[in-house]
Image (cartoon, rainbow, N blue to C red; front, side):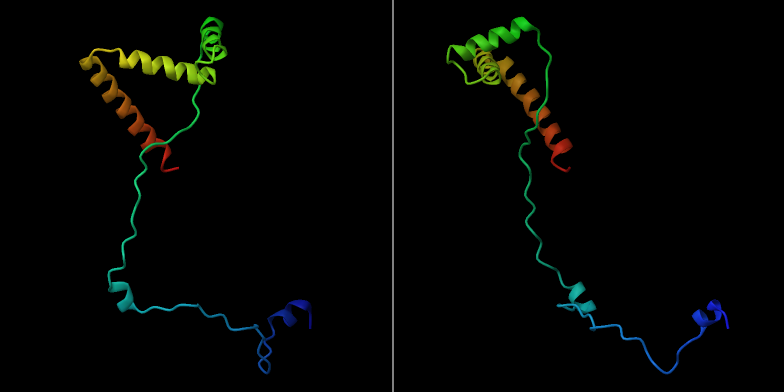
Length: 117
């Protein structure tokens, strides 16, 4: 008898010990599946924040840094936010509404693109 024959031979007298019988902690029936389960509250993401870069020249960078060094903002980013807010607040009402609509549209797009990842 060769190795192949011994591998194919079935030992009918002894069954293999497969260890502890594994059972699920919870069971259910088909009737349980038909019942309406409590719907989980789905929270809607309102906004997302991620880093994006813009290219600026050294003159603009120096202007932002100057505002920061004067203590008007904590950083160049803060100085830029300050300038944008001041500019938007000085816009005529109709132009500001257009800006806010565009801004909200772009923010909603970011949520759709980034929140599901």
